[in-house]
Length: 575
Image (cartoon, rainbow, N blue to C red):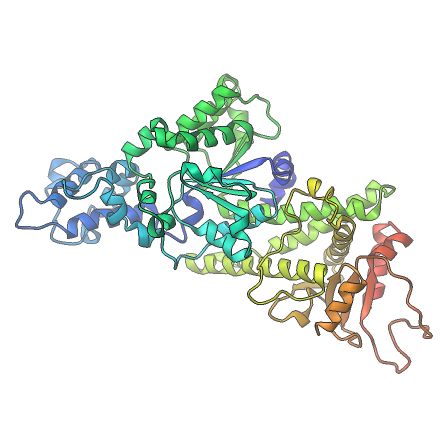
């Protein structure tokens, strides 16, 4: 995906990193944490079967099950072979029945179970929504953490989701203790009146967590039945939500991840939005981008709605502009790595100054991309074919947990000179706004972060040329450095700090010993040259090695050449 963001989807990547896209999220991002539609419909069907009272010819559960089975389009003789006395998993026609019900899931959930049960019985009780989607034991997956990071980095202001689970909100809670003041979860119309938070999570089909723990009104907002979906846009109580969704689709660009967009209420919202402001073609960046491997008929219908009369004669080109060619996990992982790299890449020019040669800036940016690609290369196991699906999922979760940890370790040490506190924020963003906006903030250290980007680029240059390998650090062992640069002769622990004060904090924190020759300190700000009586600046009079120090600001003052900076870095590090 990173290669596509650098080439055919470069315009999309630039616009995304400027905060122009709204995320529209569906069940695809939670499929490894909650049951898929097949499992859920088998559960609903088995719930009806297991509650049948055999002696009651008018049993409501039997009648409801018969109605559900009618939706599977079985022949009469096939229906007569079904044995309601054994579990559905033992039925020879189980797979065919449940597969057929998957395409009719909203009609299945709309089946009534007698007059004594509520209309939403198959949702609330059959699916067991409180424990299936609202359970506090559910843990976020890679996709949820990725979206949370993109939100904290200020690149996604609004995420619209049809999901009932609270996994995105839980990921935000885990990554920052300030999530309550940063995030507005909108489920009811009056939720939009809450002012202050800069991040919106809009749950237009309801929230199982709030339905489990909140007031009774949240249960009625769980949308899944066909009668709810088909009439959703016309219900007065949904007018405020509908207007908000229409406005987002009209005014902002759209990235859909894990959302099939086949529900009728969504199509009505999109059609109404485009009536207010049709999308032109050609469109640069694309108005709609779909994180899918292939387009289904409902995706093509969405593109037809979005581009209106401009779709005719341009259907192929529009489809090509919209299809990313990957599902949610690789797309969101790539967006996180790409956006963090893009921020630092933008700041490198600030570090080198307005007189910097664009060719030299370009070389350093390419070296930074080398670092990004190296990090991305470890996202999948070396031999995925040798592993079970669950093992691959666990590998990817461990990988991204490491990405979050080392990023937070690097940024916390760089800013404060101290290692992250246990129980503190798990993620401090590089900037809480797109970088083109952040640089205008009076307190944003654009120059220092740009020099940090230069240092990472130089490490990437050495990685590409085979001078060293790079091992990421670990917040649980902060003395091991933010990264380690390993050669046949050296294993240097590298720390990045913004200035001399931060460096003092780092030493007082006990993260390194200045007499340790296997430590390299990278300082962003310029420093006065060190006074020494020794012709060998890295060794004291007792002949013992001391920590190396590379000053980015001072080195840039001496040379803005990427090659010159690299040689100075190697010399300071003893490579």
